[in-house]
Length: 84
Image (cartoon, rainbow, N blue to C red; front, top):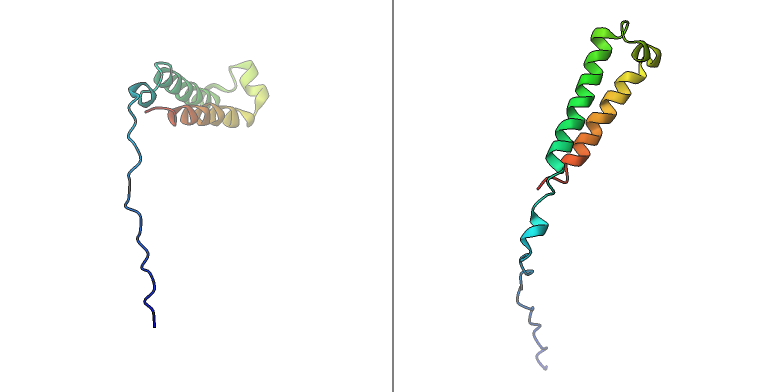
């Protein structure tokens, strides 16, 4: 009986490394924007719980203040994913 041909696997070739250093660095706007959004969200929620009755527009929004505050914090976390 004839012998079947053996298959040779191709040698592993790793993907080329990035040579462009600029793509590995995040923009200068990322960290200040992230921190600002996180602090605005935290401040909004704290003001809602501490001084909701004394600030007019905050008391009119009611429980939506929590959603607004967490929205700012969520946006800050989404900007944080761009930080390298």
